[in-house]
Structures are given as structure tokens and as C-alpha cells.
Length: 506
Image 1: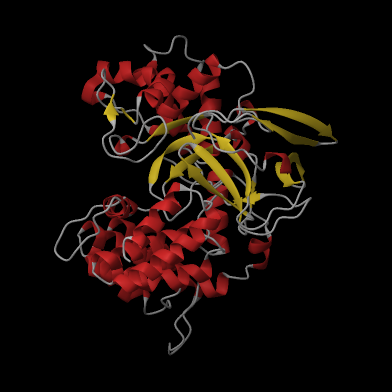
Image 2: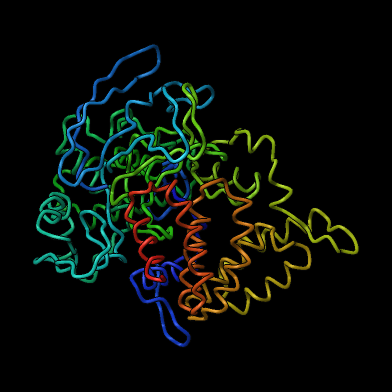
């Protein structure tokens, strides 16, 4: 699946903390405070950064011109939908060496909405039930639970009725299996896609340029481990849903569908890049990858919004990032090949212009480290630290610090893990200290208007406020707000939440 943010075992701790402090109660000394990043990626297989509630109500007129399909817009906003501006400014085309792609037919300024796409199908992660509405993903208190299964929660009757065609699948299954009901998020999403395909005969508002059936599955490129994972998911689908979905597709069709979802699904995230659920957004999946993207994907409920983070001129291809861009070229390429099966040749990868800064070595060493020593340290950072807690993180920092500068991305990777452990252990001062070391290098290494940078400022700001450091807290929140207003749009409810937090400090 496509997702943003550093993915690690410590993200859950950071996520849990974010949720607590964002709802009002920042941590104070001695008190507990829980909290909670795209080409697509499958729910549990977060990878691609390619890339929701009531569908956007509109009709589309298509004009064919050569290989391009151009959109002009006639919109009829429906209840709970967002304005659909920007659709007419893009077209599908054949991108050299990349296949299908999306390009602009007019100028888009930084921060401007390029287009919005409602989810074709989506599912809220189980861990967020009771905190978020199952139908629209709104975070609020006092949600009403499903009267039958008692496990799905909704804002109101409208959200419950809107979600019922999909929820009824799980409702019956959860009642039947009780505590033994445990399909993966990928399996749940695929089950919903199957039902949506059966109920829908026309092109949906999510498929104005690309049909879900056109998704690439890359089955010929899967290794044995990925093939086994697909078969395991198929077995789980039959186990949990065969009594509730009549005549499931045959095995080959399911292999194809799981492959498509794994390469083209998206993880939906909140303002702190915490995982909320998984979805498919066909039109968003049309965008090709670049390590220097000119757009960013954010979410309003279950609607994906694509906004410009660079000036985009008519004729420019629209590029999203499928992966976390913190890391150097070799690492990024490995991730892209493993999850999306292509070797990136974008300008950032061919120039490697940021690699030296990202892999900075200490300047006061008696002799430069050998390449093998550097590779061993990178392997240590990527494969050892995630399995160990704070003591090991501190030892790791000391070990890696013998070679790597504090701004080296693998030192930052380690500090991020340590910050997550501190949050889990309610060591707010320790978490703050790590956040302070991370945030400035993040601002250098990530592209402009990166949600990873905004997320770190947000975490740091809330920590400052909880530790009664008001001036620093407000300053950090304003930094986050500035990025979020471009990435999410000034009218996004996440931006409104941050503004409210700042106002409360006056």
C-alpha cells in the first residue's frame, strides 16, 4: 500500500499519544497521556506512496485528444461532499517510459487543489473503532454503536445507513465469529471491493480517469513470500466471508484482485500521520512516482485531496511520492523495487543531490570509515533498532554516533524510534528532547510542505504545551499550521484543530 511517514513499531506509541493530546489534554509532568504519514499500498503492507465518504456527486464529460482523456466538469454537490474544483485541469496520458500517467492542462499554484477523489472502497482500522465514525472517519466522542454487532460506531443515522451496504458483510460475520473474527485489513478491503463491484455497473466518481479493473497487479514479479501472503489472504477471505458473499470469485481472479490492491491501495492517515484505515482511490493511483513530487495526497474523511506543493505548468506531469522520502537514493530505490517493481529514474535519483547530506559522516574522525563499515551501520539502523527498546536505542545512538553525524538520516531514524519509546513510557522530556533533534534535519531532508515535517512540529508543539513551555509550543504549532495549510488546504478540519489549539494559549 502507499503511505507516507516513517513506518516502525514505535509509530503505534506515537499514534496513541497523538490521539490523547490532540483531543484536549496535553500531558503534564507526571500524568499519562496517550496519542496516536502516497502511491497506494495494501493495508498491512505499507509501501507505495501513490496513491472518503459520501461519493462526490458530479457528471463528467470526456474529450478524447490523441492518447489523452481530458476532463471538463459539471458538478452537483451532494450532502456531505466537498467542492470538486480542479478536476478539469488534468488529463490522462501516456507518460514516456512510465505508461499511464496524469498531467496538467493548466497552471496550478502551490497549495492549490488539483483534484479530489472519493474512495472507491474503504475500511476503518479496527484499532480506531469507537474513536472514529465507521462511515465518514470523523473523530469525535459520543459515537453511536451498531445495535447488532456493537463494534461499529457512527456519527448519526445518515452515516450508519450510508455504510450499511458494506458493514452488513462484517456485521453478520462478527456476530457469527465473535472474538475469533480477525481478518486482516487487506482482506476486509477486498471483501468490500467485491461487493462494490457487484453493486455497481457504471463508472464511479472515483474512476473518472482510471478504472479499478485497469490496476496493475504485477503478479509476474511476485516472489514466493508475496505469493504465499496472497494465498493466506485468500484463505482468510473464504474463511470469514464465504457464508456472507455468495459465489466468491475463483482463485485466479482473487489472486489478481489482491495483487491489484497491494500495489494500488492507500493507507488513510490523520494529521499526525497515524494510520486510520485503508482504501482504493483509482484516479489518485493514476499518478506516477517521483522522489521530488509536485503534489501531495491528504485526506478529508474518506476523500483523497491532491494539492500542488510546487508550481505546476500546463503539460507538466503530476507526480506523487509512493514512499517515505527521508532516505538516500539506494534505499529509496530498494523500497520502490520491492513494493512497486520499478527502478526509479527521477531527477532526484539520477542526481543523488541530497545523498551526501543525508549520509553525513562525523567530521572529527581520525580516519574516514571504510565503505563496508558504513554499510554495516546502515544495516544496523534499518534492521536492529526497531526490535529493541529505549536502552538499546540509547546504546545504538552512541554506537552509530561514532561515525554518523546527528543529521544523518539513519541517526534520525534511530531517534524517531527512541522518541516513540519515550512516548510509550510517558517520558515526555525525553520525547521532547528527541523531537528537537529531529525536526530541523527533517526540514532539510524532506521536500517542501512535507507532512512528515508538519507531523513532527505538531508532536513537538503538543509536548511543549503539556510541559508548560507555552511560547515554544505555540511556535511549533504555527510551523505545523503553515505546512498543513498548503498540504491539507486552509479549510481542512485538521488545520482548524491546530488553530483552535493555538487560540487556546492566548
